[in-house]
Length: 171
Image (cartoon, rainbow, N blue to C red):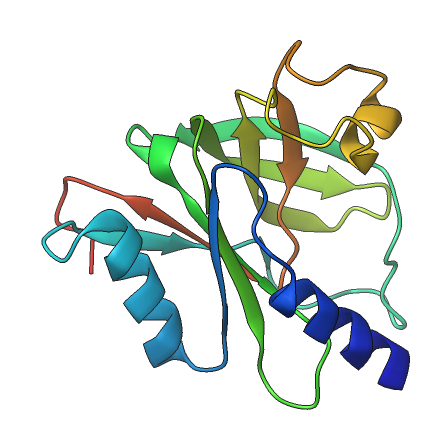
C-alpha cells in the first residue's frame, strides 16, 4: 500500500503535460469545483461511469478478461471537452481529474465479458495525440505513433467522466 500511495502522490504532484489541466480532488466538492472551473460556471454537465448490470456473478471477480462490444448506446455530442476523474490508491478518496486540449469523443457502450457478465462502459477517444510523450504506453500497446490517429480506452469502474450537455439530464 505504501508504494501505491507514493505513486499517487507522485502523480498528483507532477506538472501537467502540454495542453493538460489537472487536479487531485479529495472530495466531491473539490471535484465539482474543478469541473466548473474547466467548463465554466454556467455550463450544464453530466457524470458518466462504467457499471456492472445486476450483481457480480463471479466470486472472486474476474479482473482480466476479453470483452465484446454489443452496442454503442450513445455518443456524447458535446464531449469534445470531457474531464476524466480516475480513482487513485490512497487511504481516503483521491481522484486524479484532468482535462486535455485537443478534442475527445466519449461513447457509452454495452459490453459482455467472456464469463457472460454485462457491463455498461464509458469509452474515451483522444483525437489528437500529437502533444503526448512518444513513449506513452498506449502507443506501444496499440502499435501506433504519436499524432497519427486517435487513442481510445475504456474507463474503469472507479472513474467518473464529466461531459457538457444541453438537455435536462444535467447538473
